[in-house]
Image (cartoon, rainbow, N blue to C red; front, side, top):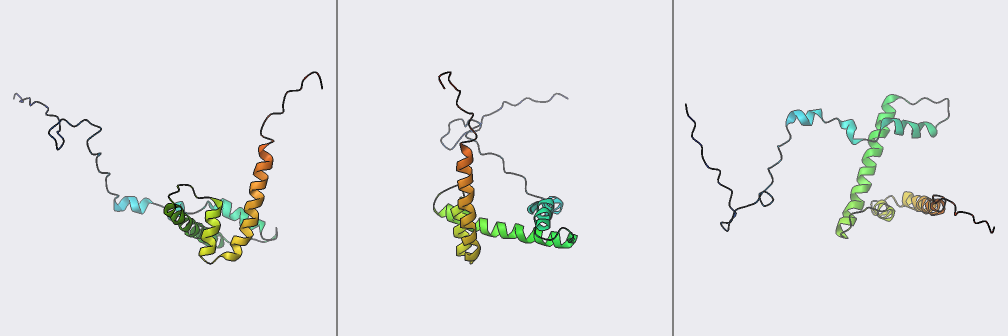
Length: 150
């Protein structure tokens, strides 16, 4: 059985000229299957349980124990809280045509969502963080070489 060879005809755009690969539409991504959705673990959306546990342990006496379900509950709550605040800050940045969410955006989001008391405390922490980063930035540079005249 001899197979017949057919010439390859290049794709043409709407003007009748030959379309280059860069001009062709990219292939559509494959839709997500139910199996893939089932494989997505809910824990992947949350902060690491070890970090949450460490923070919780630092807030209670050393002899206190924290149940696993309590850690998981706090893990889910703080992750949801962070997402809630961040999405509000991201919306503000999008309206202002900015891509980077800054500390002030988070503070604005917290105030606008009714967390003014927390925002006031975080303003102080943000100022301390910035002060510490500016004072330590001078330490990152190597010392100036000494001359023999000193």
